[in-house]
Structure formats: C-alpha cells, structure tokens
Figure 1 (cartoon, one colour):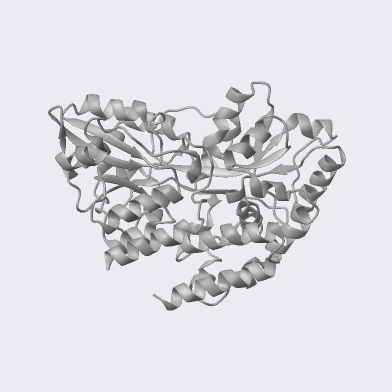
Figure 2: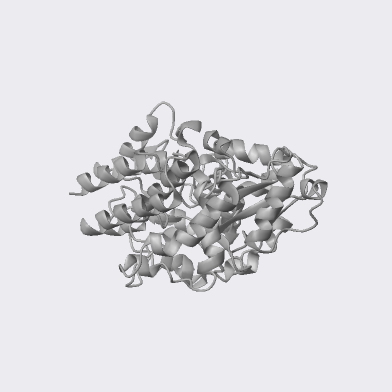
Amino acid sequence: MKRVIAMSLASVLTLGLLAGCGGNSKDNAPATDSAETEEESTAPADSGQTAAADDGNTDGKTVVTNLSWFDTESMKELKEGFEQAYPQYEMDLQYAPPLQQYMEKYSVLLAADELTDLYIMGPDTREEVIAYQCAEDLSDLPIMDRISDICKRTNGDAQGHVYGLSLNAWIRGICYNIDLFEQAGIQEFPKTWDEFVDVCKTLQDNGIQPLVCGKDDLFDFAWGLYTSTEIVKDMYTDDAINNGTSTFAEKYSETFNAWYDGIVEPGYLPQSCLGLTGEQATDMFVNGQAAMIWEYVGNMPDYNVKNPDLKWDLKPLPGLNGESMLQGCPGVGYCVAVNAKNKEGAYAYLDYVCTEEGLEQYQKATNMIMLVDGVDYELIPQIEQYRQDTIDGKYFWQTMVWEHPAAILQAWTVGVQDVMAGTLTPDEALESFDRQFAELKAAE
C-alpha cells in the first residue's frame, strides 16, 4: 500500500505542481521551476551517492544521507561545520530542487523503502508523512522548548507529536521599486485594494509595467488578497472548507473575482507572466522592468547584489477593506526516517544544527526569520521590519490549514494559470477546486 500511495503522490505532483511553500530562488526558495537545475549530490564521485548510502562508510567515516531542497552551495558552511564537530560522519547532501523534482525523488525513495536518513517536510506534505509513518517523533528534542508553537503544529499532529524540526519561517509579499513609483508620481504604497489598482493604472499610463510574477506563483496574488481581506479577521475561516460547511466558491468568490477584475483583465498582471520562470520575473524586477513583484523573502537579500542602485521596499498586499497581512509559513522541517540506515548520525546532525553555531549557519543558508529564541543574526531592513510579526505568527499560508494540501495547491496553481490564459473564469476555476476537493474527501 505504501508503494501505491507514494507513487500516486508522485503522479499528482508530476502534473505540474511547482509551487509550494512559496518562492523561486534556485538556492533557498521553497519552490522553483524544476527543469532549471540538475540534482546534485556530495557523495564521493567514485562510489556514487547510492553506493555511498548503501555502504554507509567512506574513507573510514560513516555516511549520513540527506535529501535536501537547499543546494550544496548554500548548505556548504553548515555541512562542513557538522563534519568538523562530528568527524566520524560524512554528510551526503542530495539536492533536488523544490517542489516537483524533490517530491518525485522523495516519493520514489519512499515507495522503495529507501528514504535517506534525513529529508524534509512542509505543510504541503505533512499529511503524507504522517499517514506513511515514515518519520521519527522529534517532540522530545531539547530544542523544542525554544521553538515557536506554530512550527511544532505545522510539522506535527493533533496528539502533540512533531515529525519535522522547523526552525524558521518565510514570508512573502509585494516588493516595489521606489524610483519607478516616484517616476510615476506615486508617493507611497497603497493602503487599500482600490488604491492598489489605481496605482497599477498610473504606472501603466506612465509606460511602466506594474506587476511581474513567475507562472507558478501567480496564484499568490489571489491568495494574498484573500488573506488580507478574510484571514486577517479570522485565521480559522477556511476550516469551514475542510469540514464541509462551506466551499472554495463560497469563501473565495469575492476576492478571486476582485483579483481578476482589478489586475488581470486590465492587463496590469500581464499574460506574458505565463511564460516566465520565477527567476526571470525576479530579474525583471531587479533590473527595473516592472514596478512590483510578488516575492519570497529568501530571494530579497540578493536584490542589491544584482543591482546596487535598486531602491525598494516590502509591503503586504492590501485587502478589500484596507487591512493587510503577509503571506508566510514556518520553514520546512528536518525529518529522521523511521527506517534510516544511519539513525544515530541523523540525530547527530540535528544536534549540531541546534547548537548556536549551527543555528546561525542555518539562518545564513536559508535567509529566513528564525523562530528559535536566542539566535543572533541580522536581516536587511526591508525584512527586519517584519521580524516580530513573523515571530508572533502574523502571517498565513493556505496549505497550513487545508486538507489534501498538495493536490489542492496543484489545482490552484493550474487553475489560476487557466484563468490568466482566458480558458476559465474565476468562478469556473473555484467550482473545479470544489469538485477536486470533494473527490479527495470521498476517497479518504
């Protein structure tokens, strides 16, 4: 049964689910376009990563296998720190880009009962990890006393078990080019949705493309508008979808149609975005080819590396009633495989990550906001202004609460693209989400 379920999950994700816990950076983001980057491994070249994992020993050291969606360059300092602290171990970091390539590899390994010693989970995969019983309960780790409750809830179950060690959170919102705003005579970021639409019109009237976004992040605008309109009033309103007392059509119709009427139909969020990767969209914004982008926090520190003259800031998308909330979610958590070949080494790695040195290296690798007390690190000013709100859990990401999150995220990703392409209306897309959700519930 495990093989059937795991391969079914891989099939769902292969259909085109590329968006996940947000973002598009090849190095640090929770999601990207899978065709852009080949899988990497730090296993010895003469043995191959599979042989190294099977032998469990290389050059007299025991190998700890780690399936990661953070690449080898960003994880280099953390890997080296672990190997220096625990010289008896060597980390075989097997990189697969999120989300599609990562989930395909994870699903194949799970089906074959060959999971790496360490792997990662997020809200999109929590249900599967718990259902397959393939992760150790980490709730007794000493670090848990210092970790935000939202991290433990997002990577655990109702009984208090914690299956993924999540140490940070990501946020995302609208990054805007201050110079382009001023060039169009706009003095401040809009505070309401109507003002936001007016700003888009003003930018376009001045020959400036208002918005840019990669094709697999387009749903974020619709989710963000809903978050700043409905979730800001009631964090648990989408529970009604899970328990059958409401539907996507009932909950999301107002904001989804406002998104379409406000920025899609007038062309402020252009159809050309359907041909852009997340990285291409980021480069367009950084190079001044668009005034605003919906962006993930892990990409932002590189803006002024790519363009030192760029003046920009980060704001949440304003809601229909003038309130606002950032999109965001606890970062992915480390899991220890129940059937790990080197369980002792896997726990040693978690012990190292939870040291002060390890925590600082982990923050540097991920560029996210830490949800562990007592970690000293700096953030760029545009992100620093949201540090405390993030620590306090003042953010929302739909798959944190939806049942069957991976499949419904895929439905939204494709459905919003279809709406952008003109093959579905917003209401038709919502009806399709409800049909798919009902089918998933019926199959439980």
